[in-house]
Image (cartoon, rainbow, N blue to C red):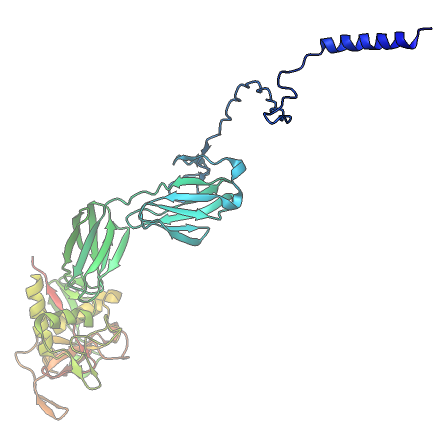
Amino acid sequence: MIGRKTSCAIFLTLLAALLSVIVFAPNDFAQNPTGREAPAPAKKEPAPAKKEPAPAKKEKSKSVASSIRSTGSGSSGKSEKSGKSGTVRAPAAKTTPGAAKLTLVAPPGASVEVDGKQRGVIGAEGSLVLSGLAPGDHQMLVSAAGYEPWRDTFVMSVASTKFEVPIKKKPSTGRLALTSNEPGTDILIDEKYGVKTLPGQVTSVDGLLPGVRQLRAIKPGFREWRGVVAVKANETVMVNIELKPILDPEMLRIPEGQFSQGSDKGAKDQRPSHQVFTTAFEISRGEVTNRLYKFFIDATNYPAPRGVSYGWNGNNYPAGQDDLPVVFVSWEDAVVFCKWLSEQTGYRYRLPTEAEWEKAAKLGGDKYSSAGKVWEWCSDWHDPDYYKERVRINPKGPARGKRIKTLGREGEAKVIRGGGFGIGMVAQRAAERSNFYPTMTRYDIGFRIVREVTK
């Protein structure tokens, strides 16, 4: 057995060997000048190894999130086209649908509607920012003075974006200022659209493209007017239209030849029936109308017709009587009218002779419009026994009329023909004769006219 001393020696030998291999850091367990143990310095952490920087992620450039479907001006068919106004960079992770904004670029002052609601006006800087637009299709209307309205479908994306509205300027246009001597004149422009003139006013037509325009003016009772005018951009062209009345009434030509004047079955002053020859002439198919007679009094300031419970208001006849026979005109009034009409037209107009009136009534048939409207003045003096003279060629009546007494008056009378209201058909009363004083008027007396035929 090993002794206790031997064991101790072995233990001390091993302990010395162990201590001989242990190396202490120079500062370990250092003391300060006071003798106290100095705190150990902080241990430095080893510097981490340098890492290569990761490549930066490329942000995708978001194009204008819009496309325009064909719903209005500036598009055609069902094709789609992408907006090309610019791009915005807005990472999707940082943009929410509720926060997306649309910046519209358009002319200052332009009005903006989205889905039928007014959304504002383009500012002086030329833009308008709209917020709260949900992603998807929206109907947009942008309108501005001097521009064609732009209306199309706009597709909003989930990101804020900017869109330049492709609104186009209107082409430069001109203006016409139209006047007419006759109110109520219809003026057609290029046979496409028209306007109506008003009394004493200028009728303006705006927005006409520059170029030559065809004008046509029409009004019942007047000759059609035609003209050409050159419309100029940003200018007003004055056009004064002078309508001329249709003074020549519709005429019926009666050829020369014989006819049987009078009636052996008629009243005493219609007998005897006898053959009469007349040269060719033209006679108005109907009586002179209020419309035609008004041209005469307007031009001459001749007194308008007046009668008991009837009359014109100034130079205007009662409403709705344009084409009715003018009445309350004397024989003398009718003669003055014929003279004026002859001067205006270059033809020779006059009242018909008894023979001419009867011949036209018998030969004209349905073309000779009278139908029991009014009695009509003739040029002849009245003599109930004149037919006994049997004048054969172009009879013009006696040199003077036979004096008659009626209505408390006495004097010579002129022939009136045709019968009054409700007396019967023209053919049945063609030979009927009557008379009236040439200076007096009556509610049932008018006149028709003859235009002489020159060879």
